[in-house]
Image (cartoon, rainbow, N blue to C red):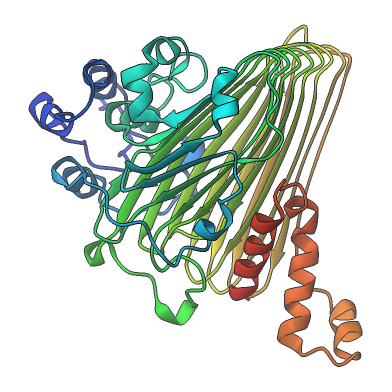
Amino acid sequence: MAIAAFKPAPIFKPIDINAEALRQYSANDSAWMQKQRAAALTMLQNTPIPTRIDEIWRRVDLNRFNLNQALQLALIGNTSAAAEPSDWTVLRDVANAPGWLMHVNGVCTTQRLDPALAAQGVIYCSLDQATREHMALLDQYLMTQCVKPTDTFFAALHATLMRGGVVLYVPAGVSIEAPLRAGTWLSADHSASFHHTLVVMGAGAKAKLIEEFGSPSAMGETAAAGMPTQAAGAAMINSSVEILLGDNAQLDYVSIQDYGRHTYNFSTERAKVGENATLHWVVGGIGSRFTKTAIEADMIGSKGTALLSGVYFADSKQQMHYDTQQNHIAEGCVSDLLYKAALRDEARTVWRGNIRVFPGAQKTDSYQANRNLQLSDKSRADSIPGLEIEADDVRCTHGATVGQIETEPMFYLESRGIPPIDARRLIVEGFFAPVIERIPLAETRERLLEEIGKKI
């Protein structure tokens, strides 16, 4: 008797995006972008959908998420920008930034760059403008060297539908001292976002970029407010980040997502670090109903450095999944990863980290640590570190912890007249402090701490 081959069920139903729907979606795009979309659609149609037996998707619960519904609403949705949110705290801190970009529903509403930087050859503009004025830059770097459409299903989907985004190019030898800023807002009546960030740093260039992402009812929402179902207006985010650092370049990049609880957030992010270059990469996750983020740092030049930091706080029934990869390809490089999570109620977090040392990447010095603070008995934190070493002269270590607030520091604070809820807040803030202190702007640090306090 013949035994039929086992075919694992995909997490999503097969998607339905045809050439005509994509043509209508791209009607207002540049000819360059329309060509890119058509090529990406072919790749998407040949890319398998993730299944339950895929290791990185095995712990994911997406029973309430309908990908096709989100995509169809995105394809026929209104792409005109809504008004900028007057009450978003991010907007109060941008007056002195040397560059500022604001997107609402994938449309750039505000764009500003210091003329002195523009005169030095710095490009800081929306993705839409870049597709019309800087095609040569995009031809060389956009989804060709870091994140590629053929990498994963969500990378191919993003390449097909990307809309809105930030393009930063800093020429060799140019230094930008104050942080550039970018804000991306997804209004409640918009169904999907396909934001793309591209950062290219020339040899010896220096810059700081802070991106913040939000949507209504993101921060401060209590567990009692509940978690809306897809039918109640769920939104999808499918974003991508690409960072390329030339030799001796230095970049501080901060990304903070603060989406509403109706949002399913999928992100693919990758950096390439050149010789003697330094990358400080800080990730903050507070909002969304579900987040699945894949982050990779490729050490392609000798003696490069990557410091990867993450802070995320989940409550109610939020799920936050972070997959990190430190790839040591060149010799003598250093990478140091520290991701910290707090979780309460029935929330779940999953961190999966891996250090891979390629053959020939001798003198590698790499470390990864994941620390989890559980504030309730029903929450769950999975921490899965890993090493994959193919060189023999390296130092690679990892560590992971999951624990609750100890009674001694609580007693110490309460004995000095501090109420229990304030004592818990101080302990959680202290737990996150080593990561938050790496954010190169005081206003952003303070706002993140404030919103963390609201979740306690």
